[in-house]
Image 1 (cartoon, rainbow, N blue to C red):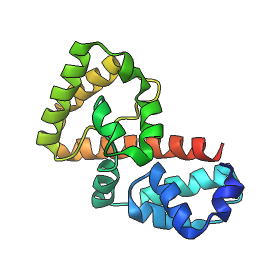
Image 2 (image 1 turned 135 degrees about the vertical axis):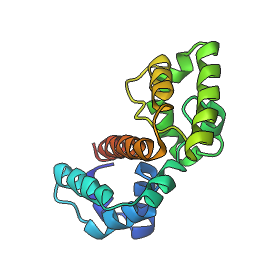
Image 3 (image 1 turned 90 degrees about the vertical axis):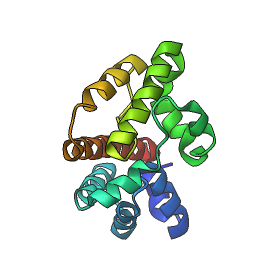
Image 4 (image 1 turned 45 degrees about the horizontal axis):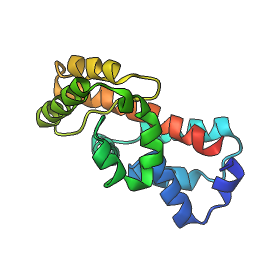
Length: 167
């Protein structure tokens, strides 16, 4: 899709398209209100500015629209509308060893129990082992620190998805 195509989509279609980039409704609404975008750089700048106005509850809403890292089953079922995006982002997980996948599953459960939300990491370009190390390191954080790190990772994911969308 081009930027011109995004600008010309009917609002309901644009809403769903932007929601696939970031599941926070407040962010989506701010993006819709900013249309039409002049150029790609301007669109990305608006996206970043919109994210900077979001709150922790918006972040949690966005996180809830992601499958767990390494959870290929939920990727294909529950998150079908974004599976083409998340699947590519998590492509390295498909090559992971069984022990790494098991460690990711265990770590994801531990993380979610500790923090109350799933482990969010910009998976693009990272191996499953690298993501596992990050997960294990971040388990040592307190909730406030981790929420802020996850929000920064969500922004990276959002910007990458938006760039791919309008490329």
